[in-house]
Amino acid sequence: MKIRFWGVRGSIPAPGPETIRYGGNTSCVSIHTAGGELVIIDMGTGLMHLGNHLMAGAFGKGTGRATILLSHTHWDHIQGLGFFPPVFVAGNRFTVLGPGDSPDVLEQILEGQMDPNFSPLQSLKNFSAEFDVRACVCGAGFDAGGLRISAREHPHGATTALGFRIEEAGRSFVYASDVGYPAGGAPPDAIAFYRGADTLLHDTTYRPEDQATRRNRGFSSIDEAAEVAVAAKVKRLVMFHYDQDYTDDDVDQLAESCRRALDERGGQAIALVPAREGDELEI
Ligand SMILES: [Zn+2]
Image (cartoon, rainbow, N blue to C red; front, side, top):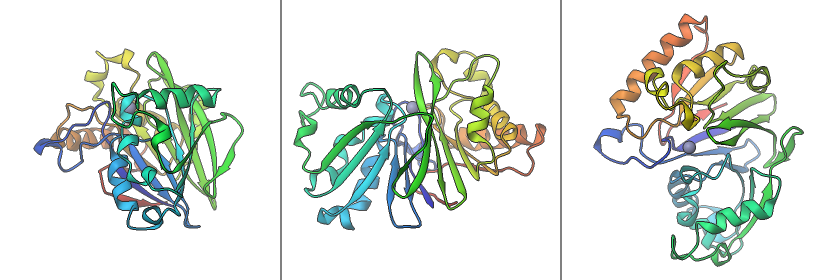
C-alpha cells in the first residue's frame, strides 16, 4: 500500500511562511492499495487538496469509490468535507466508517457542520455523490477497500478517538493520532494493537515540557510515541499531528529529540519519519 500525507497538523490549520515545509493542513492521509482501491483516513483540511488531486481521475467522471475512516469528529478531522470536490460529482460513492454505536448520531454530527450558520452547503443532502455513513465496529476486524482493518477506541481528553490497524498482504500500517494515555502510560492492549507494525503513525503533538501543562487535551508527546514504538517493536514510527504553534524549525527539533528518545529506549533499529504534507511512503 502507498500512504500519502495531505494534512499533518493538529487542532487548527496553521498556514504561513513558518510552516511551509511540513505544511499547515489538518489531518488527512490517503492509502492507495495494491488492488487500486482508495482508503482515506480523516477529513481535515488536507482533504481539500486530496480531492483536487482525485478530480483528474475517476472521481472527476463520477465513477470514483472510496472508504473514509474517521477517527473522531473534532474540527481538525472533519473540516475538509465541505471542500472536497468529489462529493459534488454525481456517481461517486463514499462509505464513511466512524466512531459511535449509531450511524444516525455520526451523520447528525457531520450534518451539523453543514448547518447554514456554519456553511453555505446547508446539508449533506446537497452532496451529489452517494455518502453512506456507518458506525465502525471496534474489536472484530472488517474488510474495506480490499484491506483488512481493525479499530480500537483510545482516550482523547474528555472524549475518545479511534485508532486503525490496516493490513494488506502481510504488511501493516497503524494510525494512532489524537491519543492521550493515562498517567501510567499506554495500556497493554494499546501495545498489542500496535505490535510489530511495519509503520506506526502516532500522535506527536507536543514536546514533553509542553505536554506537561496541557495533559487534559488528550495528545501525546514525542517521548510517549517513542515509548510505545519501542514497546510494540514496530519497524517505522511516523510523527504526526504537530501542535499548531510549532514552526518547521520546531518540528525539525522534535524529530531530533524523538530520534534520541527512541535510541535511549533501545529503539535504534526503528526508522523515524516526521510526516510532511505531500510525502509518500510505501509499506
Ligand atoms: Zn486532532
